[in-house]
Image (cartoon, rainbow, N blue to C red; front, side, top):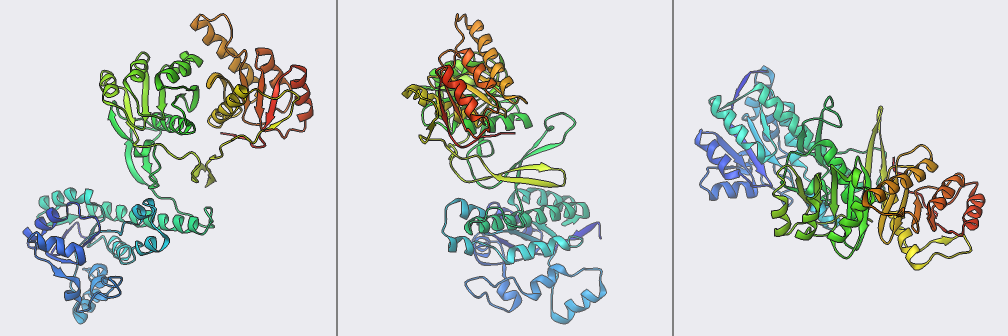
Amino acid sequence: MPDSAPIARALISVSDKTGLVELGTFLSGRGIEILSTGGSAKALRDAGVPVVEVADYTGFPEMMDGRVKTLQPKIHGGILAQRENATHRASMAEHGIEPIDLLVINLYPFEATVRGGADFDTCIENIDIGGPALIRAAAKNHGDVAVVVDPADYPALIEEMTERGGGTSAEFRRQLAARAFARTGSYDGAIGRWFAEALGNPLPEKVVFGGERLQALRYGENPHQQAAFYADGSGRPGVATAEQIQGKELSYNNINDADAAFDLVSEFGSPAIAIIKHANPCGVAMADSLAAAWDRALACDPVSAFGGIIATNRTLDGAAAERFVQIFSEVIIAPDADADARKILAEKKNLRLLLTGGMPDPGAVALTFRSVSGGLLVQGRDNSVTAGALEVKTKREPTEQERADMLFAFTVCKHVKSNAIVYAKNGATVGIGAGQMSRVDSARIAVHKAEQAAKEAGLAENPVKGSVVASDAFFPFADGLIAAAEAGATAVIQPGGSVRDVEVIAAAEERDLAMVFTGQRHFRH
């Protein structure tokens, strides 16, 4: 492979015209012949950049509404020919094929078309065929050809060619080739996933996952781990779509916790606040305003809230921002923030403010991924929303307020690491037990933390008294329910399904608890 490959002829065919004229002007200024097609040729010609139409170069017209234009031996031969191979040179001479040294191309906007909700036929028409073929050809022959698939790389190409007198180095072409193959792989993966979903088969026999790197992270969960943050192209509002308004660079853990917080608050129709620490909520509340919701969420566990992540499901206003800045937080994520809130938060220079531009649909179908040794676990996200279909298992019916609090607590349970126990009262968590190996331990830890929070607030009574309790899975024994009852809980919501359900129901009856079954669990590991 030559260390430096001169560029005499370039082929440009792009859907995204960003930076096209500037690049074309640079190439033309160096005496490089530019082959181009359709809209790219027109944009260059209109800017005064000399262009040779591909159809004129090949002697073969575009046809079938442009579906066939670059799938032609004079094009692919010019890209794939190895310059130092005598046989290749002889074939080029015999068939009148000229070398193409630079390919600048980006693909039909398939992913954007799908995100825009286009119909099936429109999506099909936005599947690029010639583009990936050209990209793969140039990337394969990167020993002689440079391939650029992203307008963001135009400045680097210009700099490289300027420094090397119009050529490119072998290392630069290798890097471009790697980016090119990643792009076609991601593109084909997006098409495959879309097709599978369109056919009602989101988990096909073979699957490809693609993403675009948004950020190279300093490290992962720990300083010795490498990490980066990628967007999956779905456009689902969240950390990946957010604009960072201020603050330090996001860390791996910041991103993970902010995602958990934002997904949680998206579940609620009323103004809601979630405070997350190490991927678990330490306080969640609904209220008539974000400021009021914050006060109630913070009261659940103010000690754990220190250094946490705050999420809102409404535009952040000044009143709520004033309260937020009273404690140290790492990240605030919200759909938007008004001028007053931005001004207040700007005083905290290191506080990261993320604005997503919208809320995700909690009921939308989506996949989640987890790596295991040698493979991936793929599943649909837990998008089930428990509504009013609750089966009362005790003689005492829950009151209207208990029923509302049950649904709130059970929704929060979806976002708490198993085994999960959540106590709630009047639309706010008052105690959370997360990630214990025993469900009764989760129940007791939640009560203990509620007691500690009450002492901090100078309250005489544990706020768990008079609350409802939610369990993400069934009580395998009555001990967890008994612990909740002894702490003062008055109603229980759980999936049911244990072989000891009769014992658990009897324990609830003995203590005059109302208990409902949902028939659905919400493990989160």
